Image 1 (cartoon, rainbow, N blue to C red):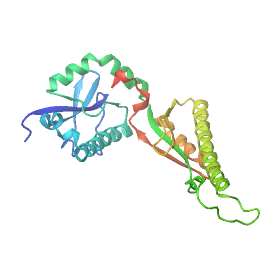
Image 2: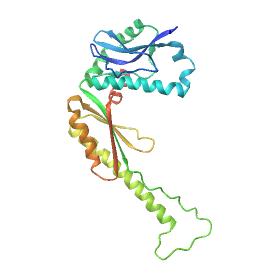
Image 3: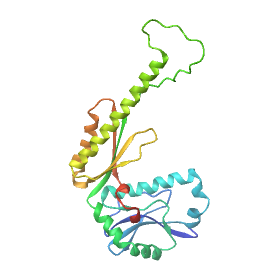
Image 4: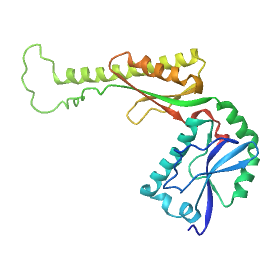
Amino acid sequence: MIRRPAWYVFGVTPAGTALPAGADPAPLASSVERLAAGEIEALVSRVGRDELLGPCPQDPAWLLPRIEAHDRVLTAVAAEGPVVPFRFGMAYGSLDAVVEALNLRADELIAALRRIGDSQEWTVSIEAAAPRPVRAAPAGRGPRRPRSPGQPGEGRSYLLDRGADLTARVRADDALSTVVRLCRDWHIPATMLTPGPDGTGRLACLVPRAAAGQVVPRLAALTGIESGLRVTVRGPLPPHHFLDQASR
């Protein structure tokens, strides 16, 4: 029993869109409901207000599973139809407050849904295959070990390893640029994303839903032709990277 309820909003869809079975909000909430507001509907869940506004959101063990639930609901909906995703943590004190907020933003939300209506976001990540471990640069101190004539020294080995690593990264960047050009040729919007923690190049593409079966395999295959590169294509995802901040 939720003593002080609030209504959590995942995002909005066109009115009449069916809710997919994979939209599981646990442990954030027990179920997802649809709330009509004119031409759009909000995806909402009943949650505890004290839980969201109390100390729990500061605890990663509490927070991370709920962020994953938020993304899981939106990803399930995006696989079936257009959705404008809201950021994690959007909640209102009543259903009337949700409807009022949506009505105030109805024009921009409807425009956003129309922009992404027949398309899905897919991300492409390209990285070089794991390079050889780079040896530490010589410190320049301590006794020098004798080596055979023609044997490369420690400094040269270090530079060779570093050069191989940097060359692989350049090839990965070039491959990502090739994907950008191909998307432009296919009239598919694409935007570069912040590199991953390990330097992996990342790109988001807004692929027409009807063309995904042809475009997505080509995105994976084009970069996989060259040995030494690892490509990952994920989707369909909520179109986070193709909406104005004002629409969320």
